[in-house]
Amino acid sequence: MGLFKNVFSSEKKETLDKGLEKSKTSFFSKLSKAVAGKSKVDDEVLDELEEVLISSDVGVKTTIKVIERIENRVAKDKYLGTEELNQILREEIAGLLSETNVGEATDFEIPRDKKPYVLMVVGVNGVGKTTTIGKLAHQFKNKGLKVVLGAADTFRAAAIDQLQVWADRVDVPIVKQDMGSDPASVAFDTLKSGVSIDADVIIIDTAGRLHNKINLMNELTKVKRVMQKVIGDAPHDVLLVLDGSTGQNAFEQAKQFTAATEVTSLAVTKLDGTAKGGVVIGISDQFQIPVKYIGIGEGIEDLQVFNKFEFVDSFFK
Image (cartoon, rainbow, N blue to C red; front, side, top):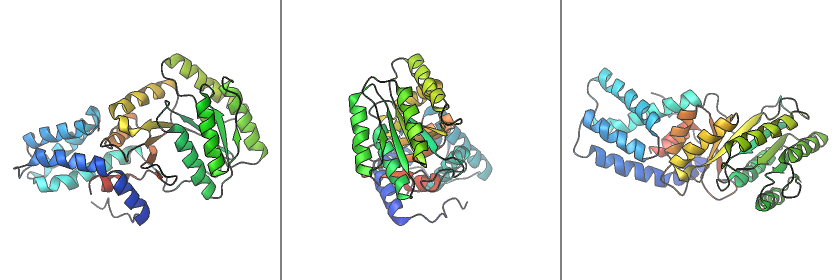
């Protein structure tokens, strides 16, 4: 199969390889033990592989899909050696990701027919939401786009302060109010400001409280409704930020937020410090929402546009 013939940007790919090192090392250590002394992919190897995938945070449902795909390959090819298993896994997992990440972006780009393009960012506190917003603002500004930030997480003074730090660092305007202000009011003011200065991109931060899903749902619905008074089809993208290092907990967060609001894309952060990189595969497959960005380091350039081929190549390298 010609899945991995893409020409990868060497610097970006090196960063990705390094960022996924812990996940890859952990996965292959488990895989090596699973196939030790085996020459053929049989039921016993598949059972072991199932355990490896689940323990690598790929998730049960996605693991079952991968195993079924490999079983079909085994049945069709009659004999598959364990040395071929690595390549087969690459192909089948890339195939799964292809079904979700259709028409994925290759760069930090926005639709040119939406101006300003409104991006609403959701996620629980501590997942790297504000940092992701700052890094996105940096990337969009580097593309020559005019960016405005909106500090609509008004429940924590720290959230407003942190977004201000990023606005200063990236040198983009920010719209904010005092802690405890109405988040929808901040979003409204941000969109009005963005329109008035002919902004290309508006990024709205929102509160990340999950203790009461009804309140969260009502709040996000209100923020959307108020934004639509300024720009009729806003927001154009609802980006859910998940902390990849939390593994299965990230699945639970995705479940809660997709129930509370319509999520249209995902960013998975903190993949560099964890062996749980497999969570990207499972979340992408289970929620059928495209992974748009991944965070693989602390640096301002360490937010990457997700490319399924690069990711699988780095994971199985």
